[in-house]
Image 1: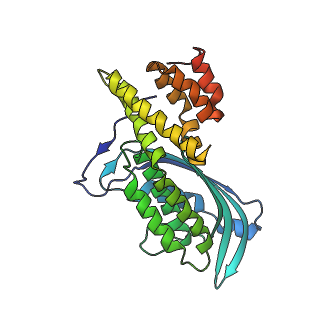
Image 2: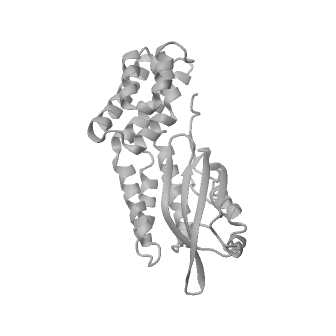
Image 3: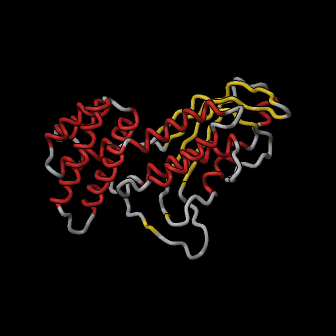
Length: 283
């Protein structure tokens, strides 16, 4: 599977949309009372439109990020005149990014607006935070540290959220996540090198020397992460989400020794790597 080329464009017709191509929302409300469930009507559509229709970027188009969001509601609490919902959330692109929100709390009533705003909002700001995280992670695959400005926006939101009297603790965790992602520069470099190699094979006249160099840089970055941190979670998710492509390009480049060592670096994908080593993959 070869990634299409990203287009870095300056918009002359206004705001560009479309960073998120498809968003699937699932709500688990089994633990809530019937009236509480009724009050959540329309939330799926509101979250979906938040991601699909918000003006995320004026200079970049065609990221086409796919999201699946699962919300598991646990309880409600009344604060002032508002009913706050307590929930957990799993948000993933079903490839190389997956995040579990263990504690989120937000007010919601039918028809409540969910949209980008300069004013902190427990739900909208949380969704915005993860939008920046996903955009940043995606951009890092297109260029060296290309997602940095979006990690900065996520960090700024998390700093702001810490001051909220009702949801601040959850934002401490989000700030830690943003800092972990932005400072894991070995993983960020590995992403860029890996996709350089993928795109290299897609060229009309592939430059095998450049491709092998990119793959060597990718491999060394992953090796350094594992030596320093073991099976670091975000690295493991990235490697497992791209295991087929990693095996394919390493075989095409004749780097079978590195492919064999990937079993140690990413044991979760051992079956895939061995399949290619045995000649049963699709190089």
